[in-house]
Length: 131
Image (spheres, rainbow, N blue to C red):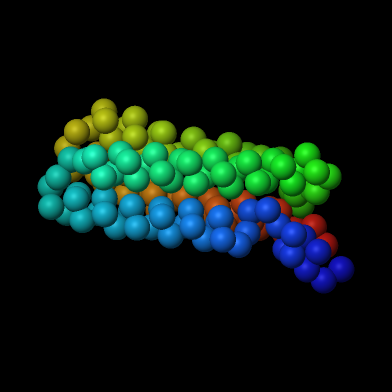
């Protein structure tokens, strides 16, 4: 079995790349704000909202694939990462609102750096099949 899981992986390709790039751009914006001693701003809030929409789209693609009969290599870990991924941007927003100082921007930066890692782990748990 060569590439059976990765060829049809719903969590790979353009949607995953968009979420990773968006998350890293938002992390950079937030880092600059934190270094400049700025609290979280409207751009960070809107960015977290856009990131959440992108992550929900990625989640929908994964769920459609599962309902369609495809299986993740490690289903428990896969769904754990999927739930975590969807919860990260709202968590960043809530924590940043609770800390309206430069540290709120640092929180957004840190969580946005976690998102790409979780996306890659999501891909790895899907691709275990046929490994």
